[in-house]
Image (cartoon, rainbow, N blue to C red):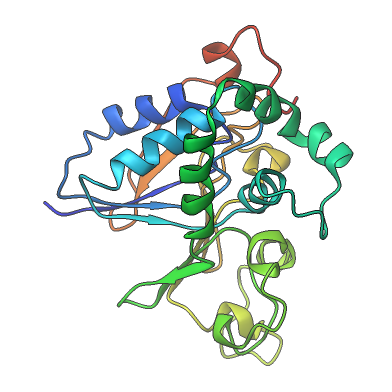
Amino acid sequence: MNRKLVIGDIHGGLKALHQVLDKAKVTSKDTLIFLGDFVDGWSESPAVLDFLIQLEQQQNCIFIKGNHDDLVLKWLTTNKEGFDEKMWFQHGGEATSLSYERVDEATKEKHITFLKSLKNYYLDDENRLFIHAGFTNVRGVDFEFFKPLFYWDRTLWEMALALDPNLSKDHISYPNRLKLYHEIYIGHTPVTKINEAIPVNKACIWNVDTGAAFKGKLTIMDIETKEFWQSDALPDLYPDEKGRN
């Protein structure tokens, strides 16, 4: 069976990524859709990128850009535009910086090439949108003016959380952004912020960020059946590290 599997924010937790791929019994026939934030948090950010670059050689992978991926790209290329290194360090960048002390220049260049290749979003042939954070244009992603919103926006998720579940899509007050796509898969804002530990569905949105950067787990989910598999909690996999906690 050729499955489409979506993976939440990894944040340098390669051990967790290995666990979920094993638990889901991923094969080369499966399509893997990664929602971004591969880096920043736990100590294996470069190793995560190495693994993903290799994984792409053996099966169909779709890699979405997250805000932390954009930050690391700026750091690796010394692009200071919109980049606050002190702030980045406080939000997982310090672990990434330290881990790159053991990485040679040739590997860094491969990582730069990979990070530059990440997609802002992916829209499949069944009108399902995969995006790291969100968008603000009421006509959809093709009309978004400020592209970094794709990996920084939280208003889409916040709107879905606040929406009355009994409100009809035909009602004048129903948000237009939630009518455009059959389903929207996001990461970026951990569901642990609303005291959840598994993927959360609100309106047409599925949030698959289950807090792997902090005290939660990494999740992989079958988008057809909604069956999901999770790693151990990341602090258990990296007991001598703090992640983004």
